Image (cartoon, rainbow over all chains, first blue to last red; front, side, top):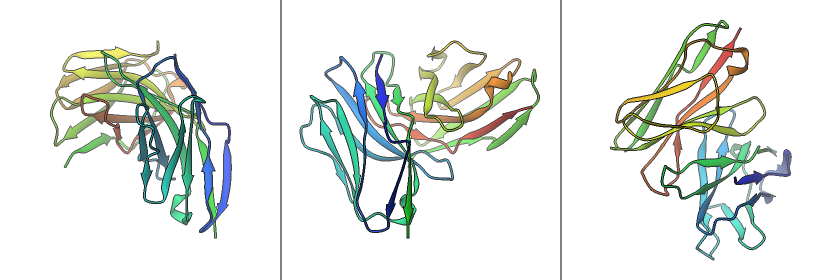
Length: 116
Length: 112
C-alpha cells in the first residue's frame, strides 16, 4: 500500500514571502501521479497542482510550483508571494493506475497560516 | 462545464438512525465516482469508488454502503449509524483516466 507523509502539521508565513510544504511517499510503482489539494475553511477541496511521475520537469501553476524528486520519493510544494487567501489545509495525494479505478491516497495535511 | 452537487451540507442524526447522502454530477458521462471521509484534524480516507452503474468497490470494512443507481448519481447509506460515523463526507468525480478528482462541497455529519 502507498503511504503519504506530511511531516509539518502546521506552518506560518508572512504575506508576500515564500513557503515550502514537504511531502514524501512510499511506493513500488513506477507510473503514478501526485497532487496537492487545498482545503480552505469553507472545507472545499481544491486542486492546486498535479505532477506525472514520468515527467522530469517540475509542474508550475502561477505562484505554486513543486520540487519533484522521484528517486527520493519527495514532492514538496512551494508557494511564492504568499497571499492571505492561501491560508488553508494543504494535502499531498498519491494516485496510481489501477484497473479498478484511480483512488487517491492522502497525507494528513499541513495547516498553513498566512499572516499580514 | 462539469459540476458536482452534494447534499445535505449539514446533518445531525441520532445513533441507530439510517443515513442517505446523495451526490450527483452534471456535464459529463460515465465518470468515476468516489466517497471519502475526513475525520476531525485528519486527511481523507477513501470509502468507496465506482467505475460504472452498479459497480461499487469498498476500500475499508465499515458500517456504510454505497450505491450507483444512475450513471451520475452516487449514494452513501447506512441502516444504523454509529457514533464513529461522525465526520466530514466528500464526494468526488473524475473522468475514467488518470485525471484529477474534483470534489463536492461536503456533508458534515454529526451523530448524537
